[in-house]
Image (tube, rainbow, N blue to C red):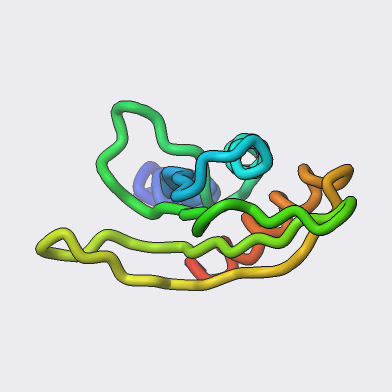
Length: 122
């Protein structure tokens, strides 16, 4: 009985498994690639999500839509959080857009990942 309670307590204290996320971009310019790299980096410190690796099954994706748009020292972005569906379709869980300063790319990526985590829940 005590052993069962200890096992139950140990299981309850373990953090939930982080869900793998693939980062993709439909654009190919340097600024879009920098945002993609920053998103992958930010997933490293996320609580509920992590960057997908080669062994992961297809899961969630953060998709940067089009090229990131430069606007002086800022840039505009549109990022969708999608989950694969059946028959090659995807289900959009969230759509995020905004502007950020280029000098604050890491902070912007962390904010996007935080919004994605809130949409995933759990």
